[in-house]
Length: 206
Image 1 (cartoon, rainbow, N blue to C red):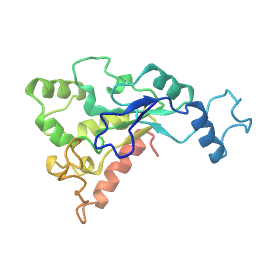
Image 2 (cartoon, one colour):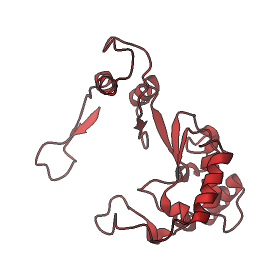
Image 3 (cartoon, helix red, strand yellow):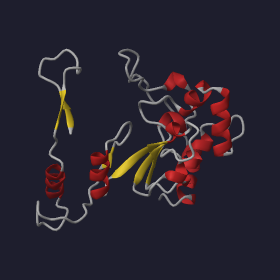
Image 4 (cartoon, rainbow, N blue to C red):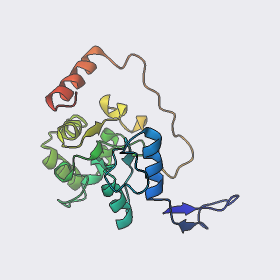
């Protein structure tokens, strides 16, 4: 389903839920990519589509069923994992291989900024889980996502460079000060490349 907003509406408040195309949409994508067995809409086998489902927030059972049925990779964001519940889906021991894991996304604070903003109890929880000593952020979290079973690990460049909140890319719900961060010149050094090449090799991500 999707939230439909009338043309010309000043806000999205007056929208309505409409039924989406579901199966038909994914079959059309499959055909356009030349995937599947060519049978078309009657084919009931699993799909092999290069798509990632942004299954964050409140996800209804029918959406989750669609993702699973079509073998689409879901998203996991490690910053979301530390609410104190051991079965939080964003903690590495809960990941499925068919997932893409992020330290944080473009809508999150950098990992350094996020960690610094946490209350003392949550910081202790994070440190215990990651076996991290003071000053080991974001390296400890980067190591954890790279070591996970998720088929793809994504580390924002701000975390690669160990930057704080001054390098945050976007703050949802705000209209100014976003999307202005730029990669500092000469920041991608040979030493940095060697470090991440080693991480990829160690965890079989090459």
